[in-house]
Length: 74
Image (cartoon, rainbow, N blue to C red; front, side):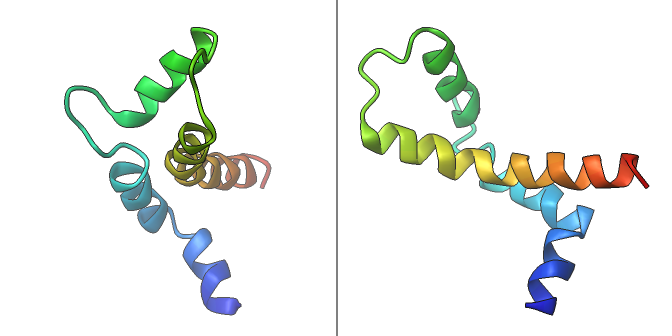
């Protein structure tokens, strides 16, 4: 568990996760941006697999936001 705490609190690991898992595939646009467009467009036709895919690409960004929040409140 200590390894996971160190891993989650390392900005370099979070940056790599956001750049890889959070953005891939990169072309024609980062995948997470396409999911946000779909979501803000009403999420019409979004099935459960699309929601899981959205969550998969979102979790590194949520960890980064959490890390930034902790750093700003120190």
